[in-house]
Every structure is written in structure tokens, then in C-alpha cells.
Length: 187
Ligand code: 5GP
View 1: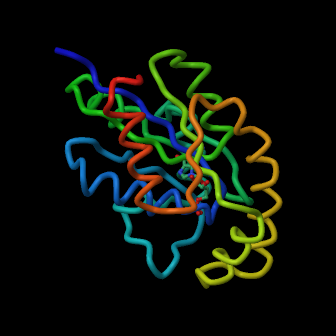
View 2 (view 1 turned 180 degrees about the vertical axis):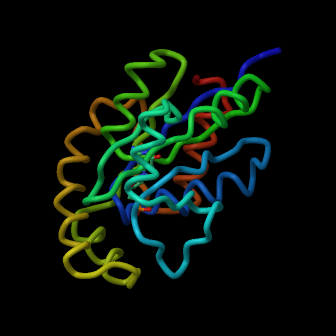
């Protein structure tokens, strides 16, 4: 049986990658998004075990020691990581798995998986637009927004290491570019 593809998608917080991925998956329910583990506090729109597996710092560190994670990273003061088992099982079944993760984790996946994974970076139209989106989202404190903007600048520099870049200035266009990359035999 043909194995599924591992697709790693990164982009600054507020670039709209969550929305692009959600719309892509509505059109392609045969592909699946990996649910990450995190030690960050839940937000109002989070659903436990759906948006993330929420863990304490101690529980997360135990998972690292037990080798349960494919990759993990610290982002804005909290741990985030990809459960290894679930990803491997789906890929073996022939399912394409999407990881929505930040750049440090993405680079680690690339090191481990090489050509077996494809890295896609979702770009915001501009830094100004990014700031506006984060403020309008209303889910983060001013301090957290500042932290996310500082990280965004560094992440955008790293985007040159990705296989593909998709600029999210128009949602439908961004989704169709993602479809081209994943479905039309580019990878
Ligand atoms: P948020 O707190 O906004 O949900 O996520 C913050 C950042 O962590 C985002 O860039 C998101 O893509 C990234 N992230 C989410 N899950 C994982 C993961 O499992 N591993 C890594 N390395 N980053 C993740």
C-alpha cells in the first residue's frame, strides 16, 4: 500500500494558516490534521483533545522522556509537540497527515524525515496586516501579541528553508495553491 505524505505547514501566528488548513480539509476530508500536545493555557475557542491535548509542564516533560513525540519545541514560553504514534499509524494507512507547527519543530522534522516530508510556509501579506489580525482576534494579551510579532519576524527569515511558500492575501487563492502542492503530484 502507498504510504501517506507528511505535510508540515508553518507560518506566523495570525497569518491565517489555521483557516487555510481548515478550508483545505473541508474540501479534502481524506487528509488529516495531527493534534498536538501543548502546555499552554486553553483559550476560549479551544476544545480539549480536538484543538490540542492540554498537558501540564510536568506531563509534557514526561512525554518527551518517554519518546512519545516526533518533535517538540518551546514557543512563547510553552511546550508544543507532535505525538509520534498517531502520525506514523496514519501514514502507514496511506493517509496524508498535516502538521501545523512552528519553525524549530519543522526543521527537526525535515532533519529526521528528509524527502519523506514537505515543508510549506504560509506568509501574511505584510507585518502591518499581521499585527492587525492578532489584535482583532482578541484572544491574546498585548504582551503575548508582542511576543508573537517578535517570533514572526524571525520565522519569516526562516521561510527560505521551506519547499513552498503560500501568501495568504486571499483565502480561496491560498487554499487552491495548497491543493496544487499537495494533490497535483508536485510532491
Ligand atoms: P498557538 O498557541 O497559537 O495555538 O500556537 C503557537 C505556535 O505553536 C503556532 O505557530 C503553532 O503552529 C505551533 N505549534 C502547534 N503545535 C505544535 C507542535 O506540535 N509542535 C511545534 N513545534 N509547534 C506547534
